[in-house]
Image 1 (tube, rainbow, N blue to C red):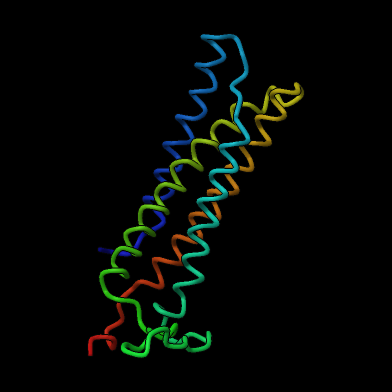
Image 2: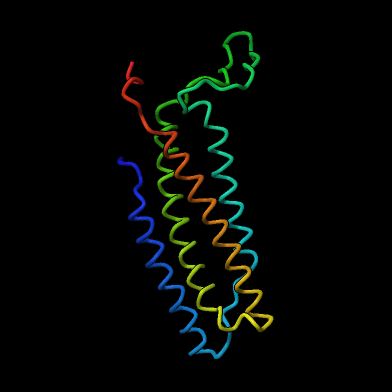
Length: 167
C-alpha cells in the first residue's frame, strides 16, 4: 500500500464539491425549497473525526519510533504477564489501522467536499433563517471532515514501515 498523496484527495473533494453544488440546484429547482443540512450530520462527523483522532493518539506510542511514555501495565493474572502499554502493535492490527486511516482520509475528503459544495451553493440564500442554519451546519461538517482527514493522514504516517524495523 502506497502512502496517500494529496492529488487524489483534492480530486475526490473537487468532484464531491461539484455534486454538492448541483444537489442544491436540483433540490431548489424540483421542490422550490432550500436544502436543509441537519445538525445531526455535523454531530456524527465530529464523533467519527474524534474517534479517529483518539485512535491516532492511543496508537502513537505503539506505532511510532519512540516508546510510549505511559506507565507499564501491572500483570492481571500471575500465570501470564500483561502486555506493556509501550509494546509494539501487532502487525495485523497495524495493517488494519493503516487501512482504517486510508479509508478515513478518502471518506473525509468525499463528505467534506460534498458539504463544502452545499455550503457554497447555499451562500446566495444565507440571509434567510433556513439558509443561514444550513450554511452553518454545512460549514461545521466541513470542519469536522478536515479534522478527520488530518487525523487519518497522521495515523497513516504512523503506520509506515521503516527499513530499520525489519529485525
